[in-house]
Image 1 (tube, rainbow, N blue to C red):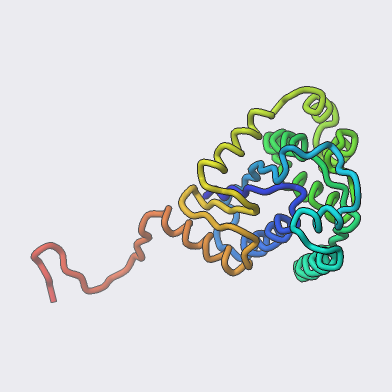
Image 2: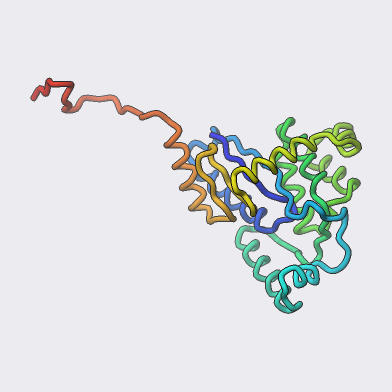
Length: 231
């Protein structure tokens, strides 16, 4: 079974959703048969490589809040993250364009390191205050996640995997995805938002059962066959 997750690396709810999905997957009987694919989604495709100014001020301006309201929003998000074992430092984030980060995630998918890189990028941005849009930062983080340095450099110095990022985003539009995280189970069921682990586990079970043939339990038992019904 394939689970595709559209998300961005500057999305706090995406990291919370990742943790909750991991909890759901850990409790799923067939977890070893689940393929997880991280799909690209840019929350702000027009973002510069590095936003100037204080993150809390940008949040307030974006949603028409005052600074106290914005700080309260950060506190709430930090508390939610803490319940999942995550330590957010949102007022120290250094946001920027995530297109190159998504290109590297496509490279990582080829080497089996996609989940590891996704985790590294989310933690770097949300906890460590790394400038997620800068090439030198991305190069270092990708190598820390186990990617080959020469391949990382080659991707960042070219347009490699750009088409793959755009293809993910086009699929998101076709599926009606306009926010992240968004979980798609075998292209049959979609779940929007960082739902509780129990909800995600239910979706795993449902998608698995719908995609598998009936399992017959062997053994004797009364049954009718056609017009014959022996007693």
